[in-house]
Image 1 (cartoon, rainbow, N blue to C red):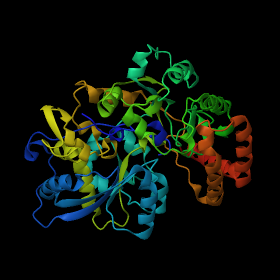
Image 2 (image 1 turned 180 degrees about the vertical axis):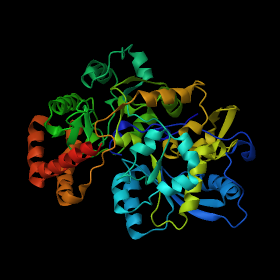
Image 3 (image 1 turned 45 degrees about the vertical axis):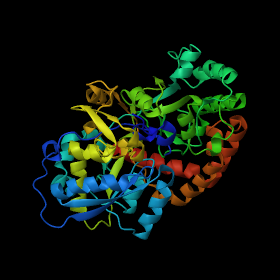
Image 4 (image 1 turned 180 degrees about the horizontal axis):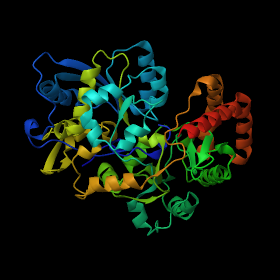
Length: 495
C-alpha cells in the first residue's frame, strides 16, 4: 500500500495551524448486503448535493464519484458533485466562495481549516440540532458523545465531527532506516532538547538528510492550551482551577523551546528555508529526513510506514490531551445557503454509518484502486495513487477496513486511546472576538512578522521576543487578553 501521508495523520505542524493522516478502505460485499438501512429506496429524480472537501484533487475523482452516485441515488435519493480543494488553498478559496454565496451543500471545516467556530458565528453554517434529531440518529449512535458535546458553538452543533482519535498526542517520528543505520537509542527521547545528540549524529554523517524536518507552520510544544491557535494567549494545562490566560511568548517554557530551536537552526539541523517552506512532502517522498513531529493515533507507525514505503517509528512527545481543536479537528458542515439541508444530513448520516459507502468514498473502486485480503482487511493497488482521499476528513474512520499491518483490535484500541485523554482547561470554551475584532486584526498582522521566524529557530528569541511582545501590546494584545479572561470567568461560572 502506498498513499499520501495526508491520508490518515496530519503532521502536528499542519494540525496546529493547518495538524497528517493515512489509511485505506474499500468494499467487498455487494452494496445491498453491506449497507446500513436508511429507510427505503428513492424513486424520484435524485437531488444533487455539492460537496466541497479538503485534499489534493484526485485524478480518478469523477470515476469514483459515478460509483458513489449509483449507490446514494438508490439508497437516499441523492447524488454528489464532489469538489476537492488542496490543503494549502482551502482556507482562502472557501472564504471567498462562502462570502460570494457560491452554491454548496456540504463543506469541510475544522479548527485549522475554514475555521469552524468563526464561520459558525458568521452564519456560514446551518444549525444542525433539529436535523441531527430527524435524520442523524445513526451519527448519534456511532459517534463518541464527546465530539458532539465538545463541538457545540454557543450551545448548538453546526457540523458533524469525524469519529476518529479524540485526544491530541504528539510524537517524535523517525525514519527507522537511519535510526538502525547508526544504532540510535530513541527510547529516552521526549523533550525537544533530548533530540540533540541524535540530530548531531545525522548532521555529521548524512549531508543530504535534513535532521529535523519542519516547515513554517511548526511550533514547539509548550504545556499551554491556546485560546486561538497560533496566537500567543493560553492557559497552562494544569491550571484547571484558576484558568488564567497568559501571554505564552512571555513564559519560560516558550523561551526555552525557542532558544533550543535557534540553537538547532544555527547548528544546521533545520533547513535554512524552514520559515518560508509550506510543505515538507518532498522530504518524505525522497526519504531525506531523520525526524519530525506529528499527531499520532493507535498504530500510526504502521500507517506511516505503509504510506511512505519505508519503516517509520515514533516515541511520545507528550501525553494525550483533549483540546477544542482536537475535538473540532475534522468536521463536515451544511451550508447555511443549502437548498437541500435534509438530503445533506441524510447523506452525512449514511456516510458515517454505511460500511460500503464510507470505504468507496475513502479508497475508490475495488479491483481498481484496492483489493480486499479478507472480510475487513484491504491493501491498495498501484492505481490507488490516482484516488487519494484524506481519510481523517471524511467521517467515521472506525468503519474503514484495516491495513495488512493493523491488528484486529485496532478500533478497540482507538476507543481506549480516546478514553485516555485528559481534558484541557479550555475544552468547551469558544472565545467570541466580536468586541475586540479590530485589535485581533492588528495583532494578527504583527504576529505574521515574527511567528514563523521565531518558531522555526530562524531568529534569536532573546532579541526577537521582546520586540515582538512590544509590538503585540501596541497592537492591542492586552485588551484582547482582558476580554478573553472576562469570557473565561463567565464561562467558568456557568460551567
